[in-house]
Image (cartoon, rainbow, N blue to C red; front, side, top):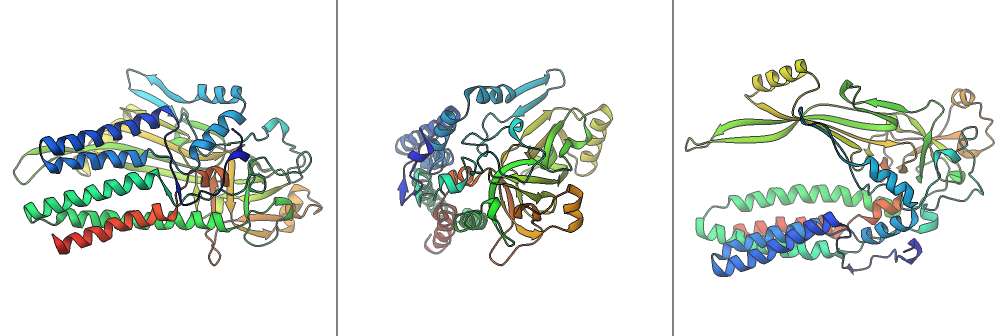
Length: 443
């Protein structure tokens, strides 16, 4: 399948189904729960129909966005099979130590990766970072060549979510009429408000991406351009990130990163009747983030992007995760247990370090503020000003009216291709809020 065969206009409705094994397994589990819930509601109690609510929710979660399945097939056909195989060998679960229960995991799929082939480091001209590449045409995945995908207003996600919401209202109504307790309705209002707020900000960023025309680097001007291209090294080089100071957890060739160290802490609590139970959850202990300048190259030219000063960075899926039943050393293990115990009687059962980031050769979407570079900066690189784009740099330390600056891993095609519409992001959770409020009045 070729990208030119995809209709970039999602339209009013698009029926979407899972496109890989693990998504089919999750979707199938949800469908099984739907059937089980319906059967149980007939042979036992009607309230057991809530099992179907859970099933529809799972089916919605595993239903892809408007173009995900098609773009997945395009990626498989377009990227060199040898390259895909090499990435597959580096990904997956790896057991570092059975005795210490240490393991690492690299995601087997990366939705923010290139969909169409991109130039490798061997073809980059380090002596002319800002000049055009080859014939000076844009990269194959640039919006000027593939267009901008517009998510469908409704997909399978909305169908399964609406069915789940209807059953949820039925179950909540039954619970209130039988017990006279309105707590479930108040919980639904709270959850709906949070999801609506999250959906609003997500939909706002998607709308910004849809409405802002993408500039070519060679013709960009001072202002707030939207740029899509490939991450390449600035003259200063790039970062080597050592996660939490551990030399065994290192990632090279980074230009932006965020890592977090978490502990799985458990506490024994007692309910109102005096029964004891164990409550466990992940707690973030330490984290760090940073970045450095890089060159965004879209085939027509390169421009300097100061990633270290951007207010927002979306790294996408994490790059690597390290898990272990113990800390990095005996001393740190003892200290972790002691601190957790003193701060609330918790027991640390698991440790986790997760690294997010943007690396060299990654696709990147940037919406920032293009400003002229200083003479000192140009002189340090020996630039003569022949290329207009070499005279500019992109910052992200302040928003413009109606524009939220951001660096996001992935191209416009990969980011919008798996996005959902504003209706699915905002209206569906807002329906939960309205329905729950209505239940307070009629139940």
